[in-house]
Length: 98
Image 1 (tube, rainbow, N blue to C red):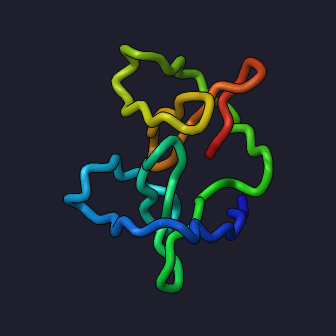
Image 2: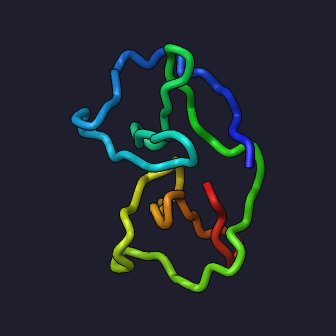
């Protein structure tokens, strides 16, 4: 799955382990949940870290929800759940990898 490169040009906050925002492992880097979207550091600036395409998570038999035990992260108009090093979002009867 590829990720769009969309610079967050007005981002002045420096994310890090003690910044107060939720850390979300994402492939080879860490995203930070901030204002309903995810930021990642890239080449000296912060990007919106969003998948470029719809990627269904196959064979996902776990139902996410408030009591599922996985960390919930607000992401735009929905909630993602951090699970196995990536984010899952419910979509049309299945879960997507975000």
